[in-house]
Amino acid sequence: MPRTITAYSNPLIKQVRDLRDKRHRREQGLFLAEGLRILTEARETGRVPRYLFFAAASARHPLVEALIHAVEGAGGEAIETTPDILSKLSGKDNPQAVVGVFAAFETGLADLDRRAAPIWLVAERLRDPGNLGTILRTGDAVGAGGLILIGECVDPFSVEAVRASMGALFTVPIVRTEWTPFVDWLRGGAGQLVGLSLQTEHDYRSADYAAPTFLLTGNEAQGLPEAYEAECDLLVKLPMLGKADSLNAAVATAVMAYEVLAHHR
Amino acid sequence: MPRTITAYSNPLIKQVRDLRDKRHRREQGLFLAEGLRILTEARETGRVPRYLFFAAASARHPLVEALIHAVEGAGGEAIETTPDILSKLSGKDNPQAVVGVFAAFETGLADLDRRAAPIWLVAERLRDPGNLGTILRTGDAVGAGGLILIGECVDPFSVEAVRASMGALFTVPIVRTEWTPFVDWLRGGAGQLVGLSLQTEHDYRSADYAAPTFLLTGNEAQGLPEAYEAECDLLVKLPMLGKADSLNAAVATAVMAYEVLAHHR
Image 1 (cartoon, rainbow over the protein chains, first blue to last red):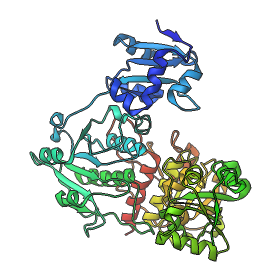
Image 2: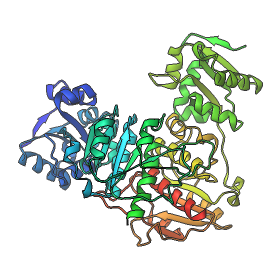
Image 3: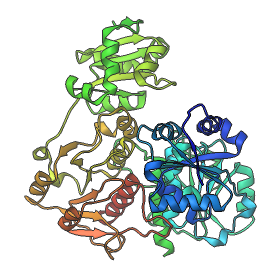
């Protein structure tokens, strides 16, 4: 039986609210995900929240019932609460039907099987959580083996990144590492490192991609450092016909990922 | 000579702050854009802010000097203010060097020359300002003739949309209209209407695109209404290899736009 919390001063509510903050996520080893679609996606991949918050009005929804059942079966806790508290947990005026608190998870480079997928995404110093989530979502769509984050990237478990991923956070393995261990690992086996660059004449459309292809995306404002470009096996450029020589980082990654996918098909 | 405002209570500061709100933008016929890169892009396309706010620390930057010069030459006003007020105008903790207040502008369907570009972007009921701005930025990169917004879309002059556009708001013409007048206009001349859909077997990669191609993007959550799909000359699908049958709307638009660009090249 779900318990009910109606007081905003309840210590669990405070603890969950704190998960909007990176330091608290790290200390507690937990993160927030919200919305029926994302939580259902999580459940289908075997990830069940430790705490599930829902409002009475949505308790009869079959997908909410399925979530409550899964949470209680996995030893977690389903908690009925007020729309007002739900809205405060999610930080949105228009609260989603459900909020879940999940145990953080992480994949190591050594856990990756590079032969498992023809495309892998690599991003360095990504700053925008929306971009990170969107890149995960694209990774899911193109069947990427995982997203490897290099250096000081935004936290993939931030509320904004989880939201933008639309559940892909649960389906695409994420590795957080640094440039040197990544390159050491990459060069220990097959793998073509491909970077987008303005300093090349290779059009992305006529390039030769070899699986497994590792697509490298640079920081939103600065692009890739020179040393990283030098390490690439292939640098390609996208046509830029406009006034500004730039694309959104998640957009550029997606255009490249779909191009590589078409070559591999 | 720029005047100086150091009091947050100054009525002009209040008026500019109000521009974060859609109703005030409409009433005043003005909007906010921030950041040296975006304002410089605007200046290069001939759009000069009516008011330019800057902090003393950045007044000597050559691009800021050029902006001040352009604003004063065009009869606008350059105003030195404090970092604190700048930060409050931009709504960001880390204020950009400059904030500009521009006269709103609009393009009508009748003003468009469909022969001027092989690609046009059309979006209906777009809800997310970041997506709208990102689509504008992609439109700039692929040389799109314009972005046509159908129905109840987010305001392209919102602070978030302007920011995500990275200046493309000033380079890509924007039309706001409804479905019926759009279709009437479209069918009054050449133009292939292409929609992304899950209800088709046509792979986007093997489809035949004819210029001018009008790429239609649907609402983030619901996609295109059936009647809109029925109006399309061509429906195509992107491969979806993942768990979720969806992509971010700005990402899907960009993958399609680069595909059409490659066909037309």
